Length: 90
Image (cartoon, rainbow, N blue to C red; front, side, top):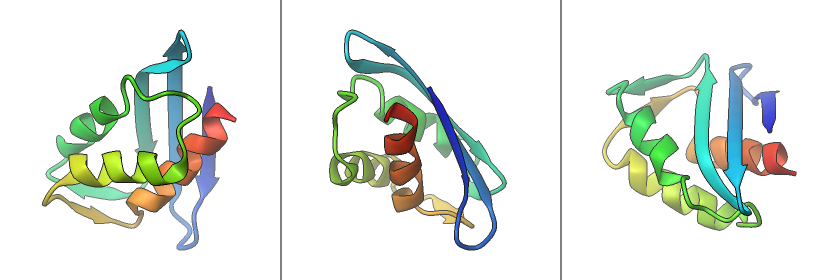
C-alpha cells in the first residue's frame, strides 16, 4: 500500500506500508523533508510496526511523535505522516 502527497508547503511525502494479519509489518516514509538526525526516520518507521491497519490518526500521530523524540523535522510534521499513512492503508 502506498500514498504520496504534496503537503501544504510544497514538500512531497510518501508512505509505503506492508501488512500481515491486519497489522503493519513494515513501513517506509520518504520525501523531500529533512530530519535531524537522519537515522530518526528508522525509529519512526519501526514505531508503526505492529500497529493495526484500522488505527486512527491520533494513535498514529502519537506513535510518530514519541519516536521522533527530540529530533528536528523540517518541511513536514508528524500529523502529515499520520494523515498520509491513513490514506495509504485506506
